[in-house]
Image 1 (cartoon, rainbow, N blue to C red):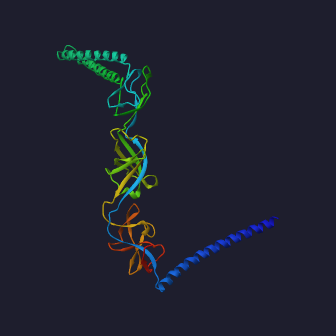
Image 2 (image 1 turned 30 degrees about the horizontal axis):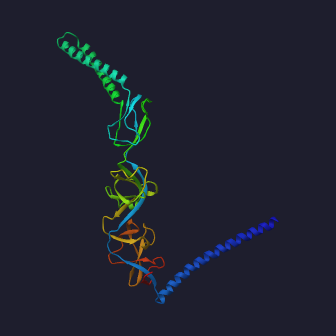
Image 3 (image 1 turned 120 degrees about the vertical axis):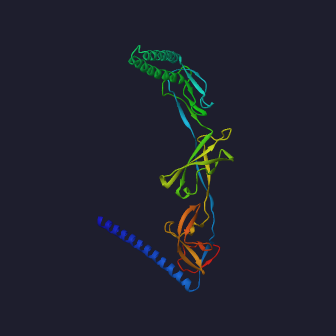
Length: 358
């Protein structure tokens, strides 16, 4: 029984190998036959139908479209620099604040008393320094005593400045202009240093972060205008400008870029909205461009077919930037050349061709 199974397995492998061999021979035969037909076509005076493009200097203008989510240019948590009990809340979630507005007030009774005491001690030491300076000049006391008082004055001054700062910190102020997105305090609550008071976002200045391909990288520039659209407002176009272009390629050979846009007066756009950005790609110099499909081989080792006396001539070319499917030809073509853009993969060098509408 096992012997029969082994025989069947061997026969199956032989059949599969035979089929693969037949397919390979058939493909090879088809390739040789195609070549023979092409050669025969030339002998009989037949031709290959192609579509061609007459080369002339152009300045391609295209657009790239990409999507992303809007972000607030500034989005921060306001951190308390003091500790104590909240005695007043002046601004709440949803309120707009200007930089310097007082959002909340912490009980300052103890800190104010400490400041007054430190201030009084500081002022008294200033008088002592002045008095002992005069006594030293009169040789009534030694300079060592004056130095001790001066050192004490400096120490007390540092305490006074610190107490003054602590008292100021009981007025919790907005560090930026923006909207309070969330708050975490209420009257009577005790907070410690480092506690998050609220989250403030700048809704007027928004940012859109994008990834730009290496093909498009050379055709965008800082300060360039960008059209921003949103499905929420289908009949409106917002304007932004490119504010940052990365200097190093990241994942997928793409470059990071940022677009800044000022919101409308009524703040229609919101952070987190999904939007579409359209960036015009304008080549800075006029040059020779051909469709990507006209290139035979890779862009690094590119060739094209040009037509000369109804024959296809394979020419090596050097490529430059690619803009919206148009490849710049830096070297190898000239104004007036007729380049085959369709049918070029069915022909060979010196083949008879005829330009037709394919």
